[in-house]
Structure formats: structure tokens, C-alpha cells
Image (tube, rainbow, N blue to C red; front, side, top):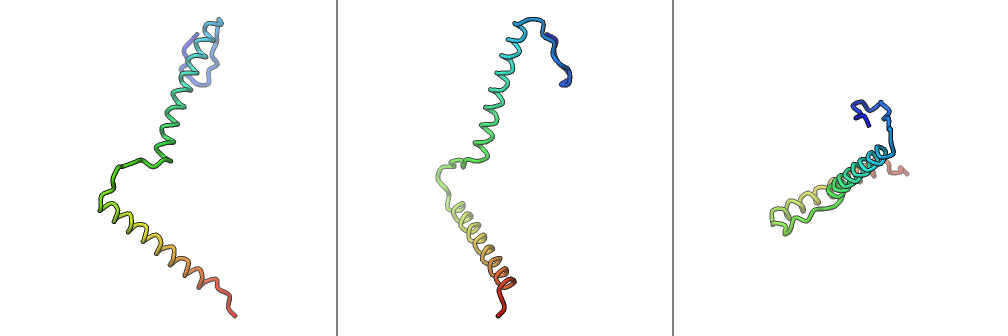
Length: 87
């Protein structure tokens, strides 16, 4: 079996053994890629346990959440004033 340097080239197989070797190689590549994607997916979408939170992290989280709530309340009030029905 010739090594493919260009992705557009069609591989030429001369025996069933070459096909079996290529199939095994592709299966291992697919398994590696699958494991890599699974690790990336877990890192992206699952919260990592950082152990105990320090008081400064708790305060920072509280301020961040409070700021988000305040921002949402101000936006809601502005939208209410803009779109309220005039009687």
C-alpha cells in the first residue's frame, strides 16, 4: 500500500492484508479522536471540582451574581417603560 501524502489521492490496495491493516489503522485513529473529543467535551461542559471555596471566591461569586441580577432588573424596567401600553 502506498502512503498517501495528498488527501485527494485515492489509495490503491493490492491485497486483503493491506485493506485489513488500513481498517485497523483507521479504527485506532477513530478511537483516539473519540477519546480526545470526549475529554474536550467534559472539560467544556462539566464543572470542575475545585475543592473548598475561599472566602474571597465566595464574595467574588456573590458580587458577580448580584451584579447580574441588578443588570437584569434594570433591563426589565427599561423594557417595561418603553413598551408599556398608554391608556
